[in-house]
Image (tube, rainbow, N blue to C red; front, top):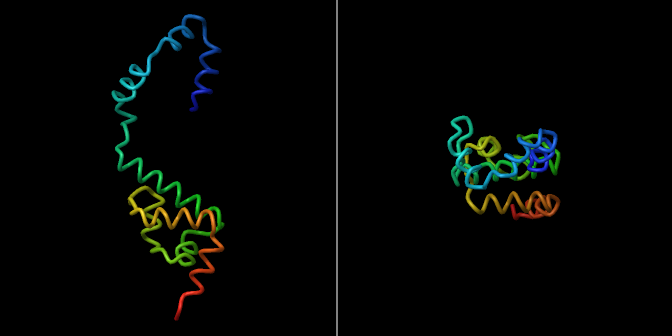
Length: 118
């Protein structure tokens, strides 16, 4: 839920509830989130893996290919791509950079890969 949506919902509440909502400090929000057993804080590693998963999916969706075809076209190990998209694998900076290039310039990557000497 976005902050705007939370704010809209709070505006629909009675004045007392709205006042309590607007009086909550950032520290109280962070304390509440940290103490929620159903919503543990994400580690830096997990945040990196989620960001990489999102990048991989965006790059693949940009070219409109299945995981198998994307992996073959751009010479990425299929199992690694699957693990990456599921957040099980934290890629190195070279793979992250490669995925960013694919997302922006897939045709250029195709051309470069096809121009490789035999």
